[in-house]
Image (cartoon, rainbow, N blue to C red; front, side, top):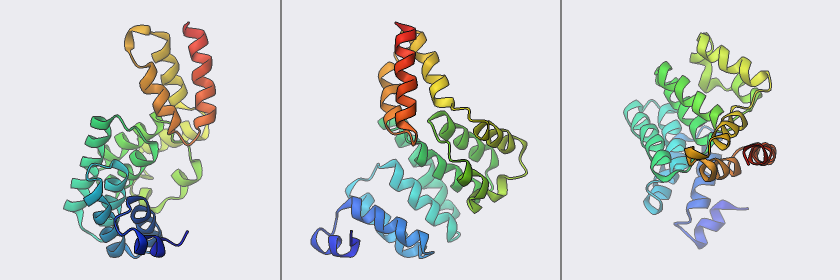
Amino acid sequence: MDLNRALELEPNWSFALDNRGAALSALGRYEEAIADYTRSLEEWPDDPATLASRALAYARVGKGQEALADANRAVDEQDTEDLWDPGTMYDVACVYAQLDAEALAIDALSNALDLGFDDVDLLENDPDLDKLRKSPQFRALLREVKGGQNRFVSVAHKALADPGTGCRMAWASRAASSPSATWAMSGLNEGRSLAA
């Protein structure tokens, strides 16, 4: 898809703005990416994924206050909107790591794992996480993922086993956004039959 052409036809199309912002970020053109993310947020001001992406771009150009504000808003909006996306939480962890907020970064990364994030290669090689590499908590999280443990399914099974939690629908919707959604949903279905 030619994102520039798409934006000529529909200048405020958030999907195209977000994707062009991601492409510009990948090219190291962070100020341009920030501009696209900002335009997208004019249409969808509370979108956690776009807030996290803009926060990461801000962090990469040394705008720490703006990065922190967007990262915190992304977390707040995910909680408010019940839009639990492991990729967004991973990006937030990267922002916090860039800002030397180790405890917040570890917490966000742990939340990303709870939501199904399981990309070992990214965890091992993402330069955004370099400041965490010596942390015992980071190394423990990495060992957990490398060991093939999927926290999402484990936590979902626990929630499904206790009908009083009221979490069945929330976990089902979170599984749909998981990078390993098919596997997570099959685990969730097993949990339903076990809980029934």
